[in-house]
Image 1 (cartoon, rainbow, N blue to C red):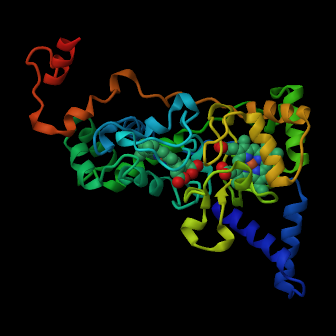
Image 2 (cartoon, rainbow, N blue to C red; image 1 turned 90 degrees about the vertical axis):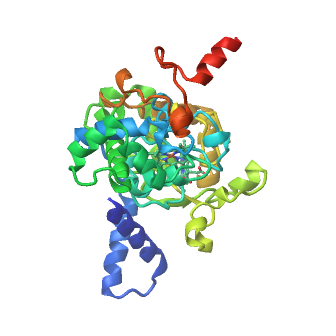
Image 3 (cartoon, helix red, strand yellow; image 1 turned 90 degrees about the horizontal axis):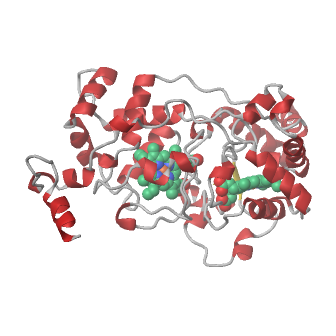
Length: 371
Ligand code: HEC
Ligand code: HEC
């Protein structure tokens, strides 16, 4: 998928930039034109094949604060399944309530994105999963500490060996691979996909009107592909300066892709985010400044397309966006009996004293006594 998107972009760039093309370039131009004239590609979601044993392993890791430096934060802290795989705050708070610079995107259907992170600094889910563990304001851990902790845990030791073989099964690579496999399982087909597969009744009249408007006004120029997003980088504020309108200081996070390439053309460019499950994942935008989806749609039309939408059009588009909610796969949630134990006491190791009968720690006993 990645290479297809790249080719389309290259072809478009070619088409825009060459007047006297030779034959080879003309082919590129024709391809570019036919790509942009044709209805932008939208495809129904097809779940990738996954290895369920890896998924179960990754599912527990994803919910386990064992991955963080102080045993308090897991992936699920900032990517909550009950919040559409994203987070109910403007920008993330990690260990010690350290506040991050940017809004957490959804992990649901992230597999389909051509790169990961708002600025695309990770090529795939494996590479992405290594990031938060060692990020000082997200999980603040390090694999040097995390690997032996996981290897010493009976539940993990057994399953890692079963899935990755007896020979050194608990490694950074295998940990991130299991988490990524779980994320590949987190795809959410819904009514939208039934509609694309030919069942027109899957969307009601207003939603269908919204889909038509979404295409007519030009949202699909950027929000396209199986995720209605995740196929390209685009400038936030393509036709009108978003940051002036928003006000406030320009943060480093606002620079987007520029932070990776230091190329002027990439200033304020972001990976176009998926719109699947968008109604479940406020607040919106990389800066988490918007909570009202109607307002988001209005701003998008204004700063990306230079259009003022009517209230009716906005209502229809928002109704359509609601139809992009999907179903979590059957085994997405961690079963009760796999809930990880308290990792904060495990973090400071030997000096935790447990009550011989109740298993309570000294701290817990003291806390109860104090109430
Ligand atoms: C402290 C909060 C926090 C924790 C913990 C956290 N994340 Fe994230 N995650 C974020 C934020 C914020 C971003 C966006 C960062 C950026 O783009 O610069 C992000 C981005 C992502 C993305 C990219 C999605 C996309 O569309 O680009 C994926 C996938 C992801 N996280 C998975 C994970 C996994 C797996 C873990 C556990 C190993 C994890 N996250 C832990 C906050 C968090
Ligand atoms: C020129 C490309 C482009 C066009 C056209 C465009 N968008 Fe966007 N859209 C983006 C980018 C880039 C972002 C991320 C911006 C940010 O977070 O700063 C985004 C963000 C969004 C978000 C918020 C997603 C999130 O997770 O926070 C929604 C909703 C959205 N767009 C809907 C629309 C609608 C509806 C239209 C048509 C009226 C539209 N967009 C047109 C590029 C575009």
